[in-house]
Length: 250
Image (cartoon, rainbow, N blue to C red; front, side):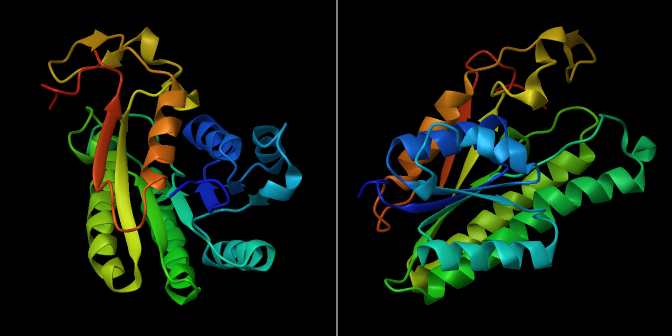
């Protein structure tokens, strides 16, 4: 099995992990659907690659109608879908739960969980009905799917829920040759981690800088997950900056 020639859709592809992963798949010969809110940034992410293999689709993954249009475009352009990297995510400022505006909670829930559900739902339907049947869904869980940072109720709750989504899709997908795995990422260098060297609150109440790793390592790991035949699956994988406070955090 090789990702060359596969049809791969990546949400949150305009920057960070999604952009690096899209470019990694394109460099391996895959056809990639780059999905994100900022169309200009999607085209920047696909720059330098054959436009015939890179389809840029602006889409708000929290909007059902937009997600349905996205998958109609994938079907019209490529006729099938082999891999989805369910990567789109957002976060809000850290705070105790009673200081978190309900609107902030809803914003994170809409993108991180509701959006992931809508994308997985549409991908599952397409993979179930295409010929040959099957495909792979890879969810971005984050190490916050295991342990929280202080003041992170919205983000942590959604990422714990992603693990439930992954497990259930893995079970329900067996009958249709659909594999589902999850990559839990810690401190990949991106827009969301740009401030980590300035110090982050720790479980003991201190504030300390944290190391980050090159986002390319995450992209390589996702490509490796997709490189397997559908008879094999990386169910869960954790990739993180080696010295970050994950083991022992909580």
